[in-house]
Amino acid sequence: MALLVTNYLLLFVGSISSTLLSRYYFIHKGRSRWVSTWVQTAGFPLLLPPIYLPYYLFRSTPRRPFSHFTLPILLLSLLVGLLLGLNNLLFSWGNSYLPVSTSSLLLSSQLLFTLILSVLIVKQKVTFQNLNCVILLTLSSILLGLGSSDDRPTGLTRSNYFVGFFCTIGAGLLFALYLPVMEHITITCRRVDSYLMVMEMQLVMEAVATLLAVVGMVASGGGVEEMRRESEEVFDKGARAYWGTVIGNAATWQLCFMGTAGMVYLTSSLTGGICMTALLAMNVVGGVVVYGEEFGGVKAVSTVLCVWGFCSYVYGMYVKMKRGINNDSVTSGGEEEDGGDNGNGGGGKIQVTEMGRGDAVANTV
Image (tube, rainbow, N blue to C red; front, side, top):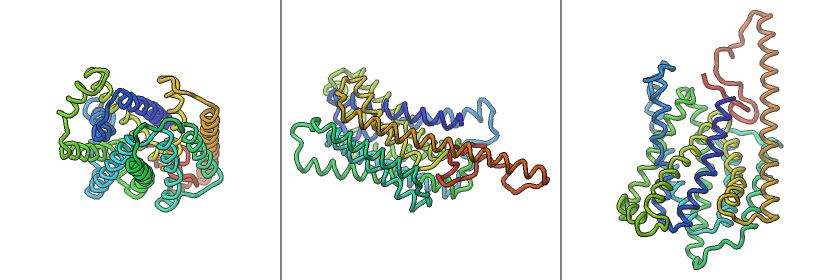
C-alpha cells in the first residue's frame, strides 16, 4: 500500500509541476518544440540511484541491476521507448499550436481510448464502476475545454490548427496504447517480477525516447547551441531562469512518468489512465493558484465532476481490496485447518480481480 500511495504522489506532483513549468516556458517566449519533446524524458538518469544504490551501497537486495533483463524484454523496452518518444513529439507539436481549451478537449479522449485498448489487449472487464468513472472524467474534461474558449492564440492559421488537432489526437492514442502495452508486458513476462524491474525498463524506454528527441533536434539544426541562443536571446526571464525551467521540467516529467509506470504495474492500465485524466482538472486549479487564471462556474462544475469520478473509483478500489483481503484470510484459515496448500502461497502479489492486476495493490516481493 505504501508503494502505491508513493506512486500516486509522484504522479500528482509530477503532473501538476510539469504542466506549470511547461506553461512558464511558453509564457516567457520559449518556443522550441524539440526542447519541449526532449525535456519530457531527459530526466531518465534520475532513475540510476534508486536502481543501483540498493544493491551496491545499501546491500538491501541480492538482485543485481539489469540481471533479469532478457533479449525479448530489451527489445520490447526499445520498441515502447520509440512509441513514447513519438508520443512526446506529437504532444509537443499539438501543444505548440492549440489553445489550452482545445488541447484539454482532445486529450480527454485518451481515457476512452485507454478503456477500449485495455479491453482488447489485457482483457480488462468493463464494470459499472470503471465505466461510470470514465464517463464522469470525460465529461469533466469536455466541460474544461468548453469553459476555456477564449484562450485561442491570435494568428493561428487553419492549417496549423489541423496540424495541432491531429498531433494531439495522435498523442492521446499513443499514450492510451502505451498504458495497456506496459501492463501486458508485466503480465506476460515472468521476469518482470518487481518494482525495481519496472524502473529498469522505464530507464531504457526513456533513454530511447530522449535519443529520438536528440536526433530530431540535431537534424533540424538545433541542439545545445539552439538552447543556448534561446536562453540568452529569446527567453525573457534570462538564461538562469531558462535553464532552471528546463532542468526542473525534466525532473518533474520524470516523476510523472515513473508514477504512471508504477501505477500500471501495481494496479492496471485503466487506473493509470483514470488518474492521469483526473489530474487535468487539478492542473486547472494549479493554473488558478500560480498564474491567477480565471476560475468560472463551468470550470468549478468540471472540477466537481472530476473529483466525484476519481473518488468513486478509488473508493471502489478500497472496497474490493478490503473484500479480497477478507476472502484471503478466510481461505488461509481453511487451509490451516486442513493442513493443505492450494499453491497460492509464497507469492508477492494479491490475486487479480475483475479490475485488473492486483485490483487494489500488487505488492512486490
